[in-house]
Amino acid sequence: MRMVLINSTDFMYETFQRCRLGLPDTGAYLQSLRGLLERVRLAGALDLMVDEAWPAEVFGALEAPMIASGILRRTDRAEVGPQNSKCFENDKFFELIEASARDLTQLWSQGAFNAVGNLGYALHNVPEYLRLGNFSRLGFEFCFRIAAYNWKELSADLQRALCRVMNIDVEKAERLIRLDGFAINNTRERPAPMSELKVVDRFMPGEW
Image 1: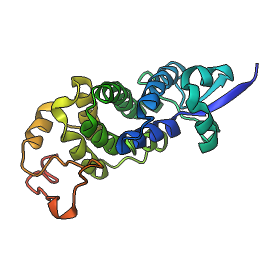
Image 2: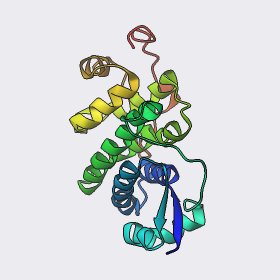
Image 3: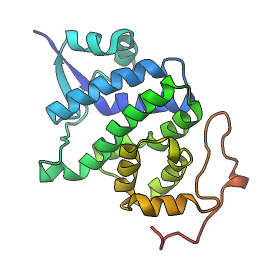
């Protein structure tokens, strides 16, 4: 049986970019992402070797653009899973992606496009953190503030996953979100002009 390779983090990135832009095929990408994440979690590997029939089953019509974009190719191999101390740090990012995929699927089906757009922007760099481990808590703060704009629309699982990445508890996050200027709306329909962005120095960096 012929085997093919799937670069899962590239597909995660492509899916979040579609959420960010509100592209018509976003729903199809989200459905496929959830199936892919289940397989990644089971395998404990970000680059998946699967039989050639599996991509067509999970991705359907998306398989052709995946091939064209290079998602069915090898990069490096990385593990995920809290049971292995080597990859424990990775698990918080994978947990965030899993919770986001569930929420985004539901929000997209409900037509909550503002929340989908903001989450897509907030999450688009997380697959890179998962693969490369080049996370900066300070650098992710801006993305967290964008995700926070739709905080009440997010599930408890996703709220906890975002807070875990930022190393704060949910109660502290909610105190920050109530501060004027903390949450940022950055959807395509209403991108945030630089003139509207506030440096809320009451919580930076000490409050974090």
